[in-house]
Length: 310
Image (tube, rainbow, N blue to C red; front, top):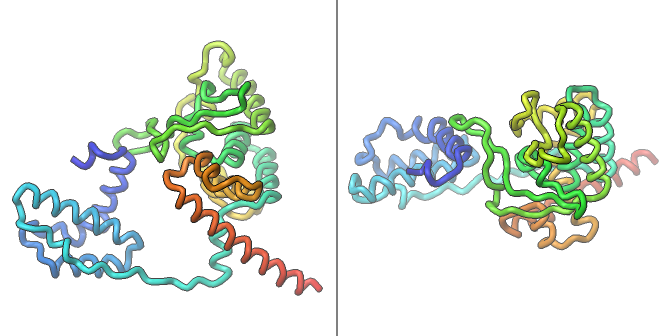
């Protein structure tokens, strides 16, 4: 029943939570014999070893709700469980800085130059991909789902209407964007120029007439001209960072980099929310606070280094 209410990728993640965290603790019980004490022991144990223990608890509770609705049990024993509070971890300045998952402007341009120089298959395609992510804030799944028909070179924007996702059952497939809403994202001239270069190169590579009849052609494709698994992007960026000894930032960190840039140039939280496709403005505001804290820590660290140099 649950499977029909969520995307295939979400269903896969839920099954994994059941297999790894719920069934090992509760799987041998007959459901009408599970007591409140059993449920309390389950959540107490889970909270010690699993960061997302509340999510696992909620999924387990849904099973009891399902049973109660069908008169298999008289009440859900999970309803009266006392949820342990998460442990507060005090992190050092160095730990916080290490979690600084975005590039400053100069770092970003250096990273993109390294991408351009890196010798690999479809070298320029990867350069176009990372440039697009860095200067639009697209999610990698959204970028890999783009067709040339989604790019409006004349009006200088792209349309986000879909994303690539993966599930064990369906493999790679197209789904809605994360917040279930389409959006238009404006493009700067340099990014448009790079996309045009890649379009011409792809046309020669695939022997296609992309100007006339191939609006459905993917911007970024694998060797079979099919969808690319979004996990590939992280493999690409890891290799580039290792080759050029760059600061480790994830592919999603390039989206954070664009978020930081948007705030630095004075965009409002509402404008940033709409551009990045956040479902809730609180997500946008939370990122703004995190970025501000990171900048303060980096500034303090720079002052200390400058003092040492003197």
